[in-house]
Image (cartoon, rainbow, N blue to C red; front, top):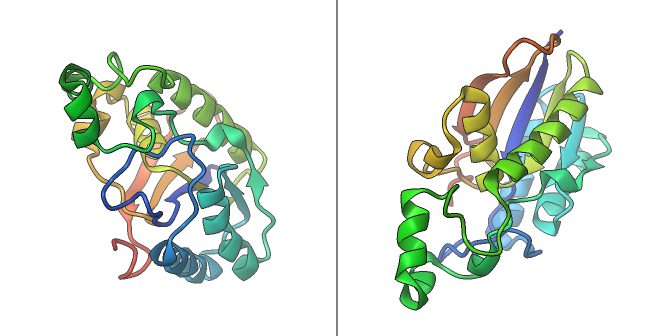
Length: 210
């Protein structure tokens, strides 16, 4: 039986507005993010989940914690589910980076894979580690419904990868992912079968897009 892997973006953080690049930085949820985590937990209580996992960063663990309380599931914490490292962009807005080095931003906007931010993680490497983690988690829960709390850029990159969309297109083809929204993938039982996309960027309540 295939496994449904439901990817939830963590709740909002203080770096959400204005939008600051948040990769390896361990930023907590803000008050809105905490409410979004509770909304995700309310949804999860009736979602017939069979397992739960999350990134090891605090914003993902804090989003998964209410889900664990609501469902009784013990989360598997996996560092391979961390957000992409944004290198010199960490903690900065695109406008702030542009003011210092407009060429870096121009190249990044044109192709965010070939010209990812200096000192950051290669997006292809992030996809490889994330897909390895998701494959392991799905294999451990055959035929189940797994909720994975992770991060915006990582989820968008993984979605592009399983659909065969060039990773360089992730900002254009999947320009937004709301905090605490869910994206559902179906992982097959046979290794030669493709991963399927069942849903993308679905809010679990009216408050998730704040």
